[in-house]
Length: 277
Ligand SMILES: C[S@@+](CC[C@H](N)C(=O)[O-])C[C@H]1O[C@@H](n2cnc3c(N)ncnc32)[C@H](O)[C@@H]1O
Image (cartoon, rainbow, N blue to C red; front, side):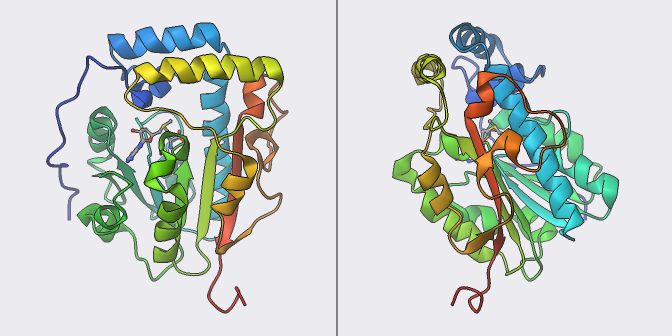
């Protein structure tokens, strides 16, 4: 069956800066509009390392997908997948095994549109237009159901997403909802923002960034390492545990940018009910 065009995608509100499109701008992408570029440029003034946050996060995602492929994972559910850029999950996975399947999920119309265009000839990857805060809508989405066999281990990717999910939306409950849909032997990968390890100057610059994001359509909420670790309930953290992104199975020298102290990530193997006792 050919992937279906996403329906019901709302018109893009180009008047308000959007976090997904600003991230695309920071990564050097072209899928952004003037208000996105204006706010992103202001953010770069107060937090000159912001591009490095995006790059470090993408490099981490790349290493995680390589690792999960080496563990035999052949299907990925990528929540908050973003605007396609260099090194998308299906490209990394399908280079190793063209049969690897990837269901992307995002709610931002530009991300959905470009993902659809990129993937329309790829039988094994598709975008689901859905809000990840509606677990059921995601898990029952036709493309997710077509690509992901929840009786087999899944690579559940929640990368650079939860910083945009307010505490009111219960990120722990959301993660737990998705994790429990995945069988034991699946892997949960989470990266998000924390300032636990940032020096005073970087914290101050981050405060400037956070207040500028008040003008975008999504706020950013950094979390403590303790909170992030709690999201891995029901999994066993893989070595080296929850770390700064650059320190998780590095394949190059660590960045010297202050951005390296702002992102945490970890990968947990989903336990069965027997493993938990
Ligand atoms: C910073 S980008 C991360 C993209 C990619 N995962 C990465 O790490 O490079 C965050 C993405 O999450 C999406 N997002 C934020 N909240 C969402 C929600 N409630 N439902 C679906 N997507 C969401 C945004 O539209 C954006 O594309």
